[in-house]
Image 1 (cartoon, rainbow, N blue to C red):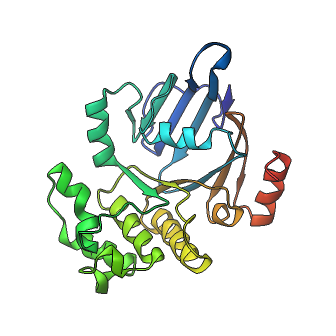
Image 2 (image 1 turned 90 degrees about the horizontal axis):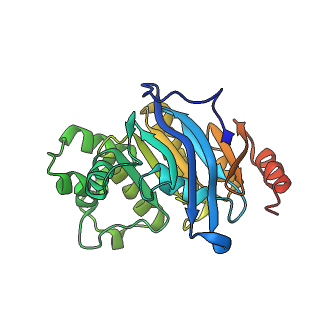
Amino acid sequence: MTSLLPGRAPATSHPTEALRLESVVKKYGSGPSGVTALAGVDLAIGRGTFTAIMGPSGSGKSTLLHCAAGLDTPTTGTVRLGGTEISSMRRRALTAFRRDHVGFVFQAYNLLPALTVEQNITLPLLLSGRAVEQRWLDFLLDAVGLADRRRRRPSELSGGQQQRVAIARALVTRPYVVFGDEPTGALDSRSGKQVLELLAHSAREMDQTVVVVTHDPVVASHADRVIFLADGAFAGHLDGATPAQITDRMSALGEW
């Protein structure tokens, strides 16, 4: 059992927590050829925090992200988002829950080319039949620095601007958690820094919980806490770490 908790977690919701994993195991296949991607992980992440997940290739970090975001289901164990247990939800209910309460920022942006910036941002609201709050939309457009490009289409934007649209889209539903899968991996260093600053601002000034998977110590250094995995198990954490400290810890885990 691996844990960031002070003991066995009680089976109750915690209003100060955005995310809680309890004894999460994820296995692929069975028998001698089966693979255990997560080996009993316990994890609690507070609201309004920025957390990075790191580990060597094959350590289970992407599987952890997918289970936490409801994109995959644990073999055993439970996942709670905003106090709601999602790991036993049926597929249709889980899809609706993710749409309304989970934000996801992909490395490839995943914007629809025929839609404007504003339309891409508000798409999750349209799909769920919810009204657009104009003041909130205007605030997000201003926050990501694209208020003057709201009528543009993705092809008229730089990579960094497209990723900022994706972040605004992830925030528009006011989700319990915004998850990022290598959100700066396709960006140059300047655009990547702007995106990271925006994610950090979302956590510290907008009380938004942010969890990202990354292999980059510079990206991870923007987080409040870096969680390390190895062989599907918790391998320690660092708070407020520098890129050099994170690199040293990763080296000890055999990444380089």
